[in-house]
Length: 335
Image (cartoon, rainbow, N blue to C red; front, side, top):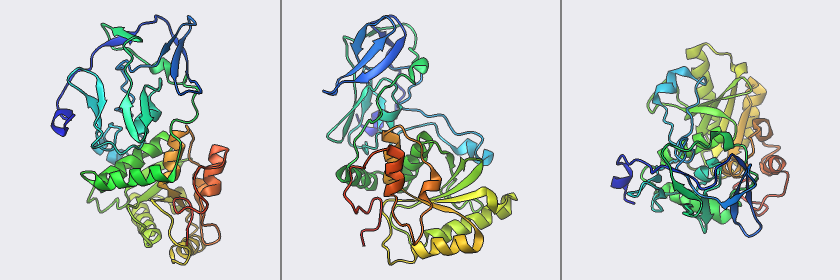
């Protein structure tokens, strides 16, 4: 699938499941086979049905976060628009632009998107579907997925994702879109700022427990990120008459800054002087939350010079040990 083709308007074929009934559960066996079970007790191998909601392509725009930015937001889920209809009216993943982030996998309520050796592909089982005459809705099936983990984390996978982001057509836009949509899936409603808006210097604005979250998304380690957050808060609160007590800072990092840098001391200084809490959230932590159907608790990521590791926060979220070496710069300083 070429980029030219992915931009064309192609109608998805109309399908329905070969079993007539309501979906009661979606389960994965020990051998990796995903099965849809209906209220008739019949079971079929999972398949994409080109659902009316197209969960793997779209995600609702977060309204009510910051109204001034609603018109500039896009409902597209994939950070690189890698998933689109092919000439046969079926969804297809362009492997040359896919970054293996797994957002589409986590959004599919029937697990009809596979992840093998970092390749993402849409599953069509012709024995499970038949031609239909209306769009098939999966809205009532969204909570029937019994899986708790879609993708297993590994350092190699994160390295692949970061490398593919860097190789994408617009790395900054890809990263910002990825973080924004992953934050939304993991429980933090947010909108991206408009590029060049002097009143909204941060990369994204979110809402968390009634407070605004001003987010800086870093493509590389930026030791001045805490200062950037401080500037963001000053301008935001002044221009929109919002109390700093109703604001949280958030820095999304690809890897944790070294112990000896002033980054960690700055976090402590800012809190001691202003009372501003700044969450330092590894990108790996956000993706792990998405892959495991977990919600991000920002309070667990209020790190400083006395607590520089996000490992405890991530493992607490998962309720298990994480499959990453210790130490690992994805979660804590290695130096």
